Length: 116
Image (tube, rainbow, N blue to C red; front, top):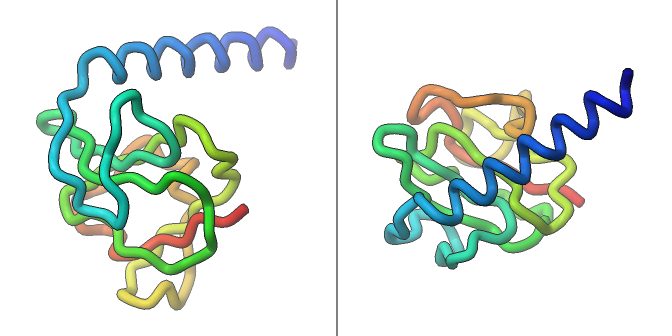
């Protein structure tokens, strides 16, 4: 049963990546790195309309700000296993793994740390 679930999840992820790569327009980056097409690394999106608002190519453990318009994130590549988001400007206090959220309210997370 687990094999089927993993295959289904992998198929859905591939379909999402293909759809986003083809349909999401580029926008100015609000994070530390420019958003490039095709999307790579961790990409932050706004929900209405769906727009890429920031990205990070590879996990580096540095405390970075979450783009102000971001309401969800998707790791397209780069080995992002843990991306805790924080409600503080300095990555202090409890962190919630952004990888496990489908979306969040705009402004809920101020900073994040992408860990290897």
